[in-house]
Each structure stands twice: as C-alpha cells, then as structure tokens.
Image (cartoon, rainbow, N blue to C red; front, side, top):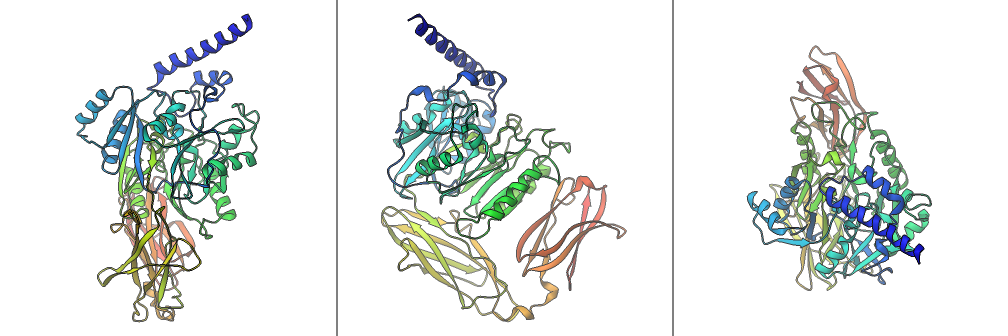
Length: 596
C-alpha cells in the first residue's frame, strides 16, 4: 500500500510541476522543447492520461485527408503569445470563414480586437485549457469518409509534454459536433505534430523522417513502430496510400516540413531556396531531387516546383545556423485568401510576387512575423482549420502549354467532380482575353464514375501566332451546393498557350523569348529575372558590368516553354550598373540592372 501511495504521489508531483510550469510559461513556449521540458520527457508518457474521449479504433469507411487549399468552414487560433500577429490573422480570416479563438478570457480578447478595428459576428470564442500558441501542431486533422461524405477529426498524440494542448481536439469535437478518432492508444498510436504533415487531398502525404525517429524504439516517446506500422496507421486513419518522408534538415531544429515547403495544389510544390551551399539549402535540394527521381504527382506526371528565396536575417547576410529560421513557405490557405509570413520589404516584395503568380485570384496577404520566428514558427504554425462540412470536390490537372499543336482543333478538359448528393451540372468557362468568352456544359464520361469532360475549341490562327487561353470549372450539386476550381474563379483561372499544328517551324526565331521586368530593381539582395519562352529554347543568361565585362553566367542550357524565374543575389556584387543579357541562336535580349 505504501508503495502504491508513493507511486501516485510521484505522479501527482510531476503533474503539479507541469501545471505550474505551463501556467507560468504559456506565453513563451517555443515550437521546440524548452530545457525544462527536456527534463520532463523521461517521465511524460505521451498517453493522453490513458483516457480517450473519441473513438480509439479506425473509421469503418474509407477516408480521405483534406488538402489545405480545399474549402474550410473555420480557422482556429489559440490566443496567448504574439497577439499582434493573431489580430492580423483574425482581421483577414473573418471575411472568409468563422474564426475559432481558443482563450481564457473572451472579453479581453474582444477588447483587443475591437481596438484594432475588428468587429465581426464570425468569431467563436472557445474557453478551453491550453499551453501554447502552436495550434497547427496539436489540433486535429480533417478527414472525409468516402471522399466527400462525413467530416471527421483525427488526432494523434502531440509530441510535446503539454497536456492541455493535447486536449484541444476533444474540445473542438464537442463544439462542432464532429466525430473524433484518436490515434493515441497502443497498438493504434502515433506521436506526431501537424507542422510535419502535408496532404495532397488524394492519398499522398509528406513528412520529414522525424515521424520515423520519434515513433521508433528508443525515440524517447515509448513507441516501437516501424515505418510499415506508421504507414498502416496513416492509411487506416488518414487515408494515406503513399507516405513520402524526407531526410531531416541539419539546421531546422524542429524538423517540420512547413518551415521550408508548401503544397500549392496536387502537383505543385513551393520549396525554400538558399544561396548555393548555404544553410539547409543542400539537404533541401537533395530531398527535392529524391522526390522528383522517385515519385510523380497523383496525376502520374512530374511535380512542378516553384522556388521561394528564403530571407537572411534583416540587415545581414546571416542564414541558419547563424540566424533565426526565417521562412516564407509557412503560410495558410483561408478559402480565397492566402496568409504568409513577412519580415522586411527587401525580400517580402519578391515573396509577394511569387505567391501572386503561383496563386492567381487569391488575396495574398503578408503578416509580419518577426516576433514569432525566433521561436521557430510563423503563420502556418499558429493556425489550423475546420474543413467544410459540405465539400464539393473538384480535381483537375491543368492543360499545359503546347509548342507542337494538338492532333485535333480542341483540348479535352477532364475533371473529377464529386458531392454526396450527386452533381446536377458542371460547366467549363473559357476565353481568350480581348477576343472571345464562352462556356460549355461538361458531360459525364461513360464508364468513369464522377469524371466529366468538355472540349475547349481552338481558334485557327495565322501561322506563327500564339493564343493564350484562360479557363475555369464550376459545378453545382443536386443539393444546390456550388463550387469552382480554381476556388478564386473567375478572378483566378487556369491558362495555357497553344499554336496551330504545322506553324511552329515558321514562327519567327527572333521573338521566341521575352525578358520580363527584373525585380527588385534597384537590387540589394535576392533578385528575380523573369523569363517567358514561347517554345523550348537553348539560351545563356549572363550578367555584364557597365564596361561590357562578363561577371557571371547565371544559366546556360535549355529553357522550357512557359514562364520561369532565375535568381541572383545582389549582395555578391559591387554597387553599380549592370546588364542582364540573354543570348539565343537568333536573339539577344538585354535589360539594365542597378545594384545599390
């Protein structure tokens, strides 16, 4: 009896220490472990106090993890530290969805928001316990049964000794009425964190190998799962058929992939880029090349890659490990708005333009995160979402530019469309700006359930003339639910360029390539050189000084048709006037660049 009392006394003392520690430090807990939390790890069993409030078995129906660009009903934040950043998030998000604010005093929060000009009935205050602001890591995942039927919440065991944080999924389940499935009881138990999980919405997920390390024998979390065990649980609970895991980065202490990577759609990856040989750049590039060499997108074609220059510490050339982990990839979709972290204008302007080009029609909003980034987190880290309870799923691989023409005078637009009530009608809207605009009803494809198609007719131009086509898809369910893809249509749309078959050989070789406006110009840091090609062409991009001396070959090789950005770091060159020159077999394009 004495031994039992001693055991419970130790447990009580440990829990009391955690409680007092978290109460004193809730405002300051970083994404990573504090030194005090590291000491707690050996006694903290990550078992949700051996008590589950949700279902501790997998969903019976086949499930699908929602992608972040899909429609959401609500955005979740925890109101503790970094309230100025949280205020800006709320200000932008209330126009798109309900905002759930987890807090201890709604009156105080409302006063702060009102003082910042935020008055909205689209806010739900959730009085609930919490330890930290990093809600992305400890809130639940959004999962649908049978692709679009019922929305479920799926929660794993949070990989921090923060027991209050690890109960939020239960709170949100109670408030929303959504069923909660918990992967927190052996043998169905995974220790994980939301910043290290991304889904394409169609059965593929990405994580760093942190997910393997923490769940392995000796990983510090009382787990003994193999990679196969993890994949099996991810399939049962999250609908993940293909779980891609990248090597951990040497300087990212928390190993969360949202610090250097972002899925923008089913086939497009935004990836952080550092100057050659700097910081985590080499390992990021190695991981990317591994992905491209071994995996295609869900459409069976190579992933598209957009590189996002990562900023050094303001006023310096310092990158990790000699600075905070400044990142632009740590953004969040809030329906038609995209929020991302900013730091200082010199680099922010480049990030803004890259996002605007990659996410047509979105309201792209930067929010200053200099206050949060020292704790290794930004916008994505301090937000989570409740997906739409009535999803209308539209999946489409956009038509690519063509330089060889099509074998017929139209392009087939093929789309996967699904709603639990069935589809009443789908339409294709298309145009050539300034010339035509039309729409056509899409027809079900025989023998391919939930697939629809329509033909986008081509104009027959004079030989050598290219036409830029723009299009988007709308769908209406039998229930009356409507959706568009892109979700921002008609402000946002897909676009491609097409030529007439047989005309390619007669296109003037003197007008194949266009050099867009270099920005920023004058330049003082990472500088973008936008290039547009009407067909694939071999070219050399070079930098010359004012007296005509070649300073650097920026690129030499084939440039594919379409738009592509090249970069230089202006800090590597002396101040003065330079010229960027692009040479092809039959064309020379030059633009002045000032480095200040």
